[in-house]
Length: 416
Image (tube, rainbow, N blue to C red; front, side, top):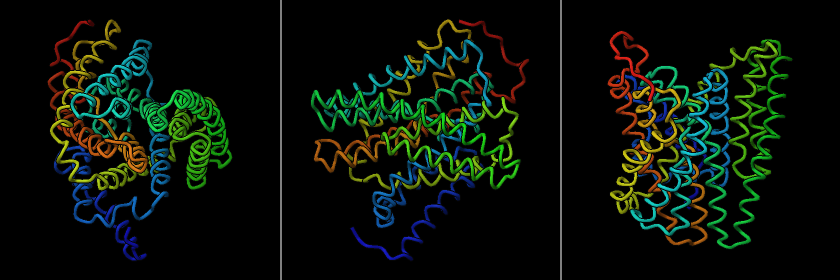
């Protein structure tokens, strides 16, 4: 690894932040979601300036920085969940999408990874686990752009935000099984999964109390109130990751949702700090997509491009519609609402970060086929982002689900 001077490192950071901001400013002018620009720009940046890749510059600190940034993004997503109320039937839809739909997607993705990409069964199950992850880093920007009606938006935001940490934990557990590859290792991984949930819920409870009481003590001071929340999230998520790998993501999400609910009950307003976290999430999404896309090795992308694109299209055109049809049946959604839910399942930064992290570890352990994990995940993430990002608006319009559409022009549909 080439040693860079402090000036070179500063230039690398400036380019990453500058490119991320530029993409997010230009995207609205082109009338496309920013993610459409961030992925190819990051990939090209990695080709043109491979010496500026953040994993080489930061070393082990890169994964720590990614985890903490994602924790802040998920905390912001949790705050949003606290403001999105779901009806009883819609809660059932979200539960089905998570506890029935995610395993269906995992199994289908694993089969496709084995037969299309030629991965061994352990690696295929690992990639399948990584690809159940959606999340607010990608769902929210696309929905903000498409502006679907509140009901389907709420369902999709809840599903994506909940799947981010749960999918990340599942992927880490599957990774541990692949790495150890023994009966004792499998039992150890299952115990690690249970421990991750215990750690996340305990530290989230502590974090919620610290966040709300700290905000109340600051008495409306925006600077100190923001510092309390940032410090609480970074402390609890970091400590959770110290105790159990990747449990910090679920911890941060639960703190966000729990803080919003507890604050309402205690008449504590979190509104003054929300703009700050919205800005942090926007910057974080841009920087993470640029940084991780730059890590993808171009020769491997070319070698597996066609099977990976085929796998992405299967997930989009077959798996997601079947999952949505199964999980939304007889729960009061109109046919058009069910169709839109079946046409929205992009993969986001947590999937990319997980693929980069576990892929590097397995490559270092000389596991056959591990080098294909990140390129395959990158291609599939890119295809889902491009397809959903470019079609979200026309599909929402065609189904009569845009918020700004005249309700009288939409033909009423009876629930299926």
